[in-house]
Image 1 (tube, helix red, strand yellow):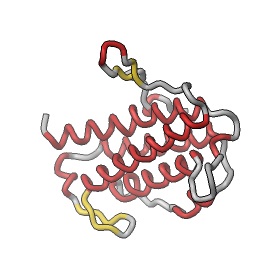
Image 2: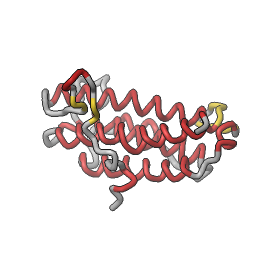
Image 3: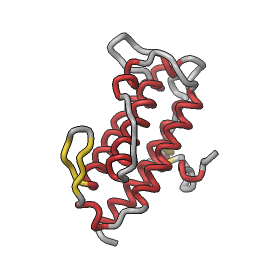
Length: 180
């Protein structure tokens, strides 16, 4: 396996398995109405972050890497104070992740060095994917933290017995298989 193909494989893993599995567990643990709750006016809600992740991933991967037309209103992602239900927000994010996975799956190793201009930035296909994975990880961590604040002790991602952190999500637990 080449470094390029390993990069694409791991990127798909994070986009379709680990991060969405953690986010799904968080969203499903939240009490009604908590998805739009903010700690204060300068903080985002989980709903804002779910809108923002869907917008960012669609813009960078579907639009930027996949060269498909995308319309995005970034400021509206953060301005929203209410909106779709937690289930609908999660479904929208998972739909975007499926679209993105198709784009990444279609790439060749040679495509990774292709130039792109996304959100006013010069980058490459590899740079765009790397940005999305890093960005997704950061906001997943915020969602996890906020969920632990709302509902302490309800989410668990790893089995820690025996000093090994074994993931609790299943290998087949990915957004690619949750269509519909």
